[in-house]
Image 1 (cartoon, rainbow, N blue to C red):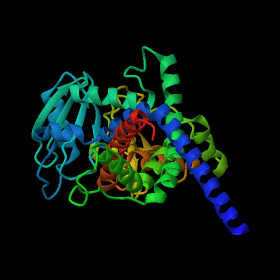
Image 2: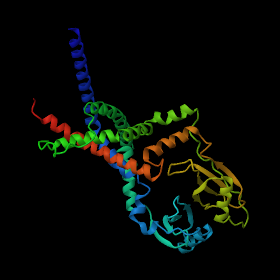
Image 3: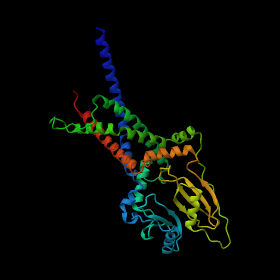
Length: 384
């Protein structure tokens, strides 16, 4: 006779545990739901932050790759001669062979050049409308406000809320999986088998199915978001590796030569390539003053982020290499920090991972909507 009592106690304890998990899941979801919906939508857009302008303006971005690009001297001369008296300030090199080269002038003009024939594909001045929208979306995703400069206090609070929402999502996912485990439903029920299925049941089925399929990706996004949002995350990378944050670039100067002429850009790129073998140029900053230097940012294959850290500084007259900074040797903690960001925003594996991150953001938004509808319907249902 003792066995039924033991079974009854086990069933009661399981029921109480499930109810506690359900209440925790509901409370976390209701508190963080609005913020998670915002993060999901903005994150879905930000995954393609670097591609959206290409898609909106293909006529100035996409080119047909030729056998080899023109010498950089010729491309710089095209920009310099066409837009003088403005001077070339920076040259941006694209990672893809079918994208235009971008040259920034001192008056703020951006010139889009076909690197294979020197054709000017377009020009813009200042920040484009699409870039302004993307900046706003980025700020909302990171700090929940569209303008960082005008409301710095709110920006600090918004960053904390975003980090807390990521923490809540790290808890929502395991509690959701625990609730899912009883039914293990990962599909939609069909009216073909039961014509009496209520409409809101589809929202519940969608919530369960999306949650189980997206759980791993959303948990990774939430965990990496916590490490980005809280200050201890950045400190953790340096503490684990026993390293420090990289020091800012030290100022270097060229040695002026009376009536001397600066090196040609092709010479500078060749010097940078020899100083940093295995890397490719990402951005070249031109010296605008006699004592200024050429700064060439170099991308190593191991660096997955859109931004680059490695650089070579070159005397504009003698061509002497003044400084070489390498992403591979500067700071292991910094490399881990950048890797974490690459995982979070989808840069880690290029286009496939960006698609995955974008879809995960949309699924997070769908989870919030289906969860709220299911909760509202069940909360308003008459007691049995």
